[in-house]
Image (cartoon, rainbow, N blue to C red; front, top):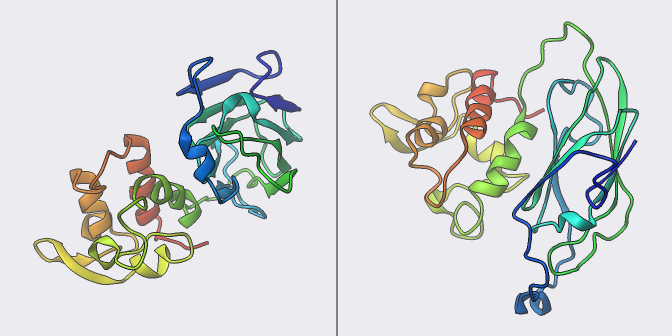
Length: 233
């Protein structure tokens, strides 16, 4: 079924942060050099044991204009699509042990720059009934992308000498000793033990991120990932 944010008949759509009608585009539009791009998705393309009860999340490198978003979830009833800045959440009635493909047919950022090379397809398979599903890095990397990277844990001189970019976060976190975050706790992530992991200690206390906040739901995803063994895949 096809879900278009521009069509209120095809899907139930919740839009967060709409741009006022008739507002002028920012002068920044002329400075945008990198094209609109998909940064991450949960599930990742090719995932084989996605929890059928979870929402699908896709994240772009910039805020998406919800009126331009067109996507299709092949194999599922018409989904609900929620746009929250650069993050798109797709809620659908998925079944156990089933193949699905999320296809993005069109999207533009708020400056009118389109997503190139469409359609973009993300194929995945839901887990069979009774399968024990554990969190992986794919469940928390989008949180790092939107809450921890901008001006902080990225670049040549990341805060705390910790880089959380995709491709680096796992090696920088799991079983790596860093600065002490609490008495007796120096390991950034101790698999299976959130209370002895600096990442969780700092997130739970509100000391991380330095800028802004992390929602309770995202905090729980980080805690669950560590508790499940801090798996990469």
